[in-house]
Image (tube, rainbow, N blue to C red; front, top):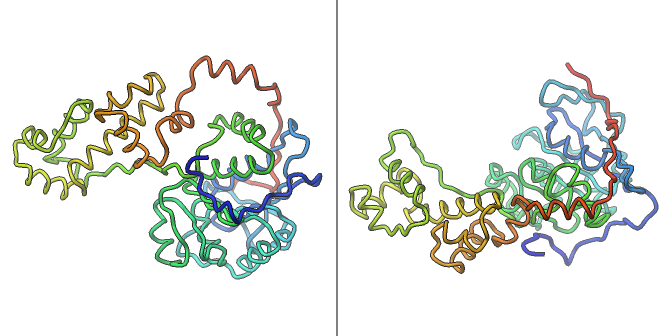
Length: 365
């Protein structure tokens, strides 16, 4: 599989063949990240009668006391850290702050569970808990792009990959910001129960069945330092409106009524990159929009984006996005009517309405 970032030599196959349901434990803490916790609940706790042998789920308190979550709610859970000894998968759904110390009791419980053979996963800032526990030493990991520099600075023994959606390294899973936790969870479900089960869960979530772990977190489009009143704004808008045309540095300078050297200096001051690098990212951004829309043939995207050739288009797109254009369209593009019809024909009517009973009591403050 292209660009899936796993350390396959050290992968341990989950005991999915066992008749006993796999236990998934989500760590709850004061200051809980509600969305990230909700991802774990939706993927692993929601009853799924269409499957004979789904997961068991438990919420495990990281420490005594109330668990207050974002949005003005509190959460009660009866379980404690001792339950991690029986877990197949432990999920840390975010953390309350990169600067906030992690309780040693939680770190010790995670280390013990990992030594026993459990898999440990983090969503977004939850990576700081795994790093504090020493579970990422010598391993590749990722997190939300806002935290990658902080993670690398505080834990130099961790090989931080700032671009990818998720990383698997010897039973330790880390994902990028928030929604990437869904991609990681589907990846784990695919490992445990197969591609058909993962596709069924994704269908209920109205998500693509799979996004490669190596796909870029976002298109790194340079942000202008001072857009308002920028001397480059008119030039940038004109280029975007004619992105399919050839834009050498000389033409840019002529439109901006300045010299090539002065133009380069202005781009460096206002955008933080060179004119041609900015143009490359704009072309890739436009191509990504066209691929997601799905209304234009793939063979025409490179021409509309102004790449000059199909080979240049494939090279620049993959360099920026981390996946080739055809795979990007497969994962994020709008499916055709025929593809939707075929998917509906082949899928069984197994998505029955159910009532999701949360494993913990949630009450509004």
